[in-house]
Image (cartoon, rainbow, N blue to C red; front, top):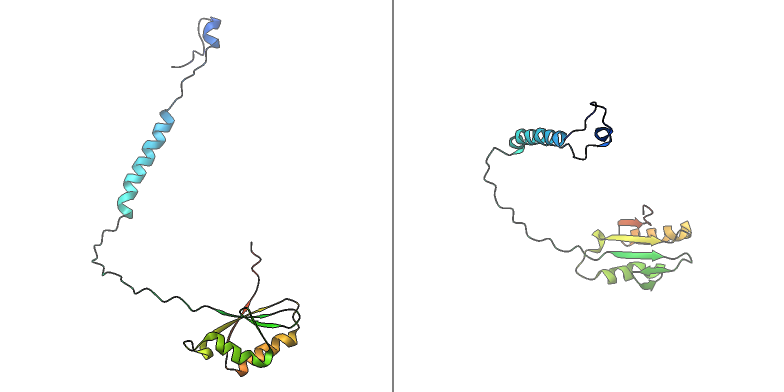
Length: 145
């Protein structure tokens, strides 16, 4: 079990090494952890009994499909994938929303090329405001990846 460190001077004993693993420190650590968990487990348990009511919620409706206005660098406008022009933007936007959605409370997402002129962009924003579309969100590219 152990190596002989000193002795009669015989070289045979000095060359032998202990080839057994000493598990005593491992067992000591495991016993200490077992005691810690035995003490901590009752503290983590909920001791106050409460009769909770069932939580049954109706499934929510799917949100409506978002409406995108795209502005290309050359100034061309698109509602979703359909081309439009600035003069017809309000009517085309109402047509794409349909009758079931309230156009004045609908959020409109604007995707604009980074090379779009500021005047073209503001023309679209002004036309949206003139047609009572006040909830506008700007879409940008996510560079966090």
